[in-house]
Image 1: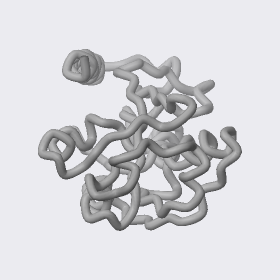
Image 2: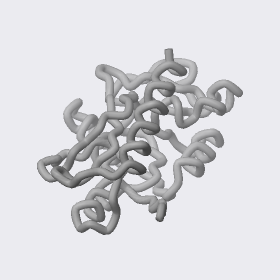
Image 3: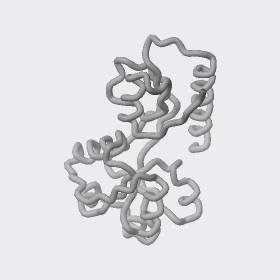
Amino acid sequence: EIKVVTGETPDTIEKLIKNQIDISVSLRPPETAKLSCHAIFDDELEFLVSPLHPWAQKAPKIKDAANETFIVASRNSLNFALVQDFFMKQGVRLNSFIELGSSEATKELAKLGIGIAIAARWIARAEIEAGQLVALPLPKAKLKRRWVVSTLKDRPLNLPERTFIGLCEEVGRRMIDVRK
């Protein structure tokens, strides 16, 4: 039986550890002692802004981020924690957020100029190519993420699980090829 359950990385990893799910596809969690993590691909987060946003004409400085409204899918996500940590290490505190629960809705508000999204380019490839969004690198440093398939350590995998992991790795290789 195959059942797909969506959720943020902390939630899916908790379900995995409690044996409520067999496999998690997520960002690499910070604590992996109980897990076996199979790397799928790495990506990099960027600002996604409306073409009418001032940053689309002049690249921002890191301190400019403190004055903006950021559109996020979930404040309970590992992605949000990574972004917060990244800016805190740069000495910038992000102050204003709109939380939507959906990356699709996040892109839509960014397209309207209501705020700024921080996402990987592959999330908004169609919108960027159509000129509806502009992707800008984060100032000062890169913010990279690693996507993994996680299973419980020392739990033998059955053939469908091994096949699924192999398919995820193949899709990851294709993701990397498309970005080149």
